[in-house]
Image 1 (cartoon, one colour):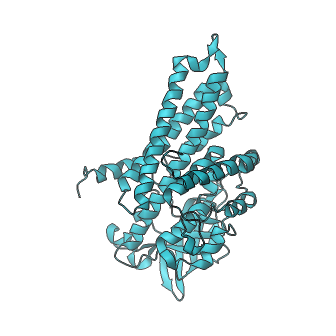
Image 2 (cartoon, one colour):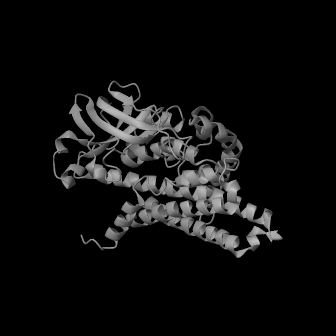
Image 3 (cartoon, rainbow, N blue to C red):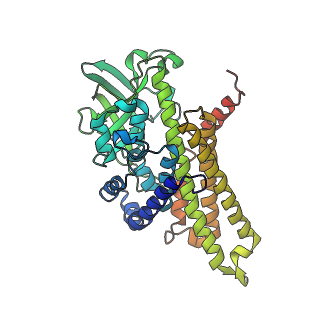
Length: 390
């Protein structure tokens, strides 16, 4: 992703690319084998480079920039490791989320340690029975002296086993029994610290891909969250709208992450198609392979264009629900197709762990599932086109 970027954004892109390839690359093999995100080697260095304060205004001690720059980070890190891009996702997005929800009044006590990498956050939104349907969440927030008490269960939470702070989405208890639309108005986001009584975790989940990103369930049994949460859900449906805005940012991050995985698979395939020979010539000279590589390049260009368009609209404060869903739908499906073709181009070598191609394929497969399944994205697009009426 370089076309359409400003000189400043290109400079950041080069910094992230060099950091990821030089410093993160050597960590991948062990992290994949152990299933652990190497936080001590990653977060402090990202903080030093100003990568954990992107999207935070300079007036609040941040690096500035917006959604497009967040997407640049996602793509460049994912080119080295999809698991690292997910492990760092909450750290990259949480400061920007805090500012997006609270503006210049952002909680400095939380913002500063996030931007310096001192604490590892987790975004605890997904529930076992809710999945993509946030309006149906059952985790409740009951008002109490000095804050709220949270009760419920979250699942598939990245950084769940090791996070220091959890951004928990919950519905106000006095809204929980209301019809769906009214219940949604009471949704807000609250901050719960690790070690808080009533917070517990399931064992780390074993996954097909993204193995260097630790994932677990999070259980909340009357866990206390102090006042001054991120959303609150206190007024006229604002809480649910805030959640939808957060999902736009998250979905764009996943879109760009998918582009990064696809880019890595494309680069490996292009090189292999030039080097590997069959029937007296490089396999890229055979249309069966060459056309696959050509379509990879085409899909990558289209995917980046969709991410860039949606990011620019989001940063301008314009309504971009459809554009975000189109980016998420296209980019994640393109990544699955490109990484699958990469395995095919590499033949048996693409199927074994000696080369990273099989990892790209495994990591890409979750893209169409998380942050709202691609079936949901198609429903959103249909709704935005007026097919479902008002």
